[in-house]
Length: 206
Image (cartoon, rainbow, N blue to C red):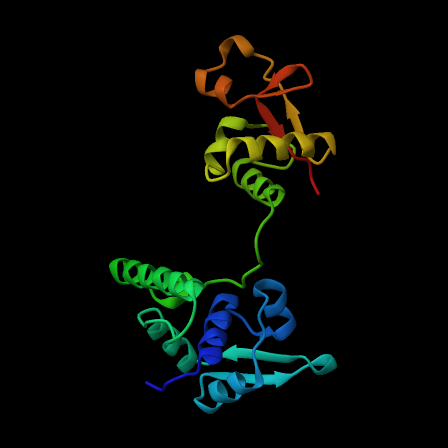
């Protein structure tokens, strides 16, 4: 296995995370990182990436099959010498990923599946959860089911986002008309808003 420089290893990881062909502007937007010429030349020389020049001189990089194989090995390695805590934390995470892949017999293609779209806002998470739960746009979905789908978002943060989106008419919160029949979990999931408890959410067609 070839010995890669620290910038080259960083570039290899960035291109794995992006999955598809990535320009330096793409990498800068997502990861505050760009592939340096020295790293690009080393990776290309080792046949780990291909690159091309696009519009306005932007350079686009993509991992080769050999690059993906080298990326798989990277999950098992120690971080480069002399790097800070962030690198050690990253490589600790990569070791856990390596063990998970071995346990479940995953390939890199099972993990790095689609292009990284970047961090998602709470609004986008709400929209995605609604699309999963609603049989069609405009259907009412219980906040119980929505909370279950978004269990990793703290309740206060989710409630604030829902109330604000309702105010902006992006979503519509509604009270259940049959309050007397509500189960305890539906009552606990309700959001006080406008002087009454809201139990349902609706998002219309885009």
